[in-house]
Length: 489
Image 1 (cartoon, rainbow, N blue to C red):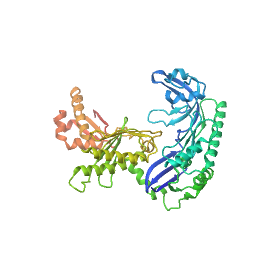
Image 2: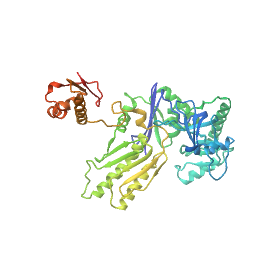
Image 3: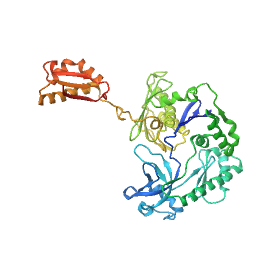
Image 4: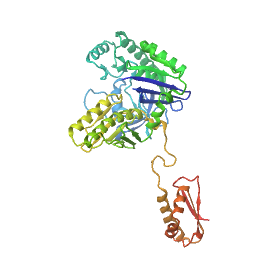
């Protein structure tokens, strides 16, 4: 698969896109006015302990306190002097932390919706080839690394790293020379000692370590041997990328390219168009079928429809299977592109035969292998529903680029002019009946006024007016579509 990385850098915003076969698969956005918290390490202070929720809140100096669940706290107490039994139940949160206690924590989930960030005491420091986990022991190799011979070689190199602490060999380590892992391990340990030293003299709350800039992060996390080139449209950002790669992957420096095109790089390479497409509910498939993607508070619902696709033969089962398999590929791309997380429910077109359901399940699982986020897929139900749980640590694309509609307040629904006409009729009839003196004035949005005037005779009859002399209708363009006013003129 041909992969490219594209970085668009401005003064207040930097964006990056991972392209697979020319189409965006992942989009990243970072803005100066809203710097990310994910990966940052803080010296915080416990502000509250909630035994009923087995959690605590930690002040890390942000607008909202961070949430610390007991499962994210307990393993970290082993290096902090707290209780750490090797087996049995995890102690209650009130046995582990107290209000006012200081704690070294790392953000593992950005603030989402009305919730603050989530933190852990299980600190991890990512490098390009390794992740260092100071509070753990052992060495492990990413399951994404294949074949088995390379896994064994990297496992042996990881096992040879001296000293305490745990290390995880990342996918980018594939093909690494013998000395590279040891050198990076020493650098990560030095960085951890610097953080510990800074913590000793810091007054909580304080940020001790900030994650790298977006450009460096995408190189660290996404630039593998599979990536053909990295296109950057800003000279300063390009130089930062060169400095990083010279230190950690000098053999990949030649893949950096300065963008010299005649227009904005995201526009020229078709990325801007795909971002706009990813903000729509309906996504068309090449065959003529389409998806409807609807995020809600509890889950994300995805519906698959045949649309204009009528198949190539008279058998609906084959048409449904072809549409479903095509949809599975696009669904996974949209999940990654939009960074949808939590519970996802996909309503595939019903398939009668079990072998076709299994074929669809295999196609979906194969596509999900390209997704870096952890996910779990449940079997297809007899109604054609598939449930997926997917980990998400940062706001999705829609949350980053969009806000609540000032008209519908995020509901996505407005009462129709007809509904408002009937409501005004009922209210006017009641009000005019209690206080018959007039004349009366109704002020409303132009669409509602047009609805009333288009049904003028029935409006007068339903409100109890004998003639139009007792009532006046006024159109107010600045009104909210659902706003109206009834008063005596």
